[in-house]
Length: 45
Image (cartoon, rainbow, N blue to C red; front, side, top):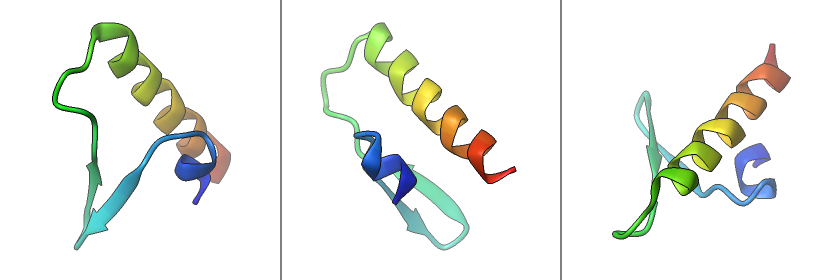
């Protein structure tokens, strides 16, 4: 839910976290995904 609140759609598949990026994605958008995920993980610690 924390990822979704920040605009990042994820789903879990067993013990794997799956992302649903568009088929066409640029480096800035990948950086944004990494930043959001890092922020969420930091918030859990």
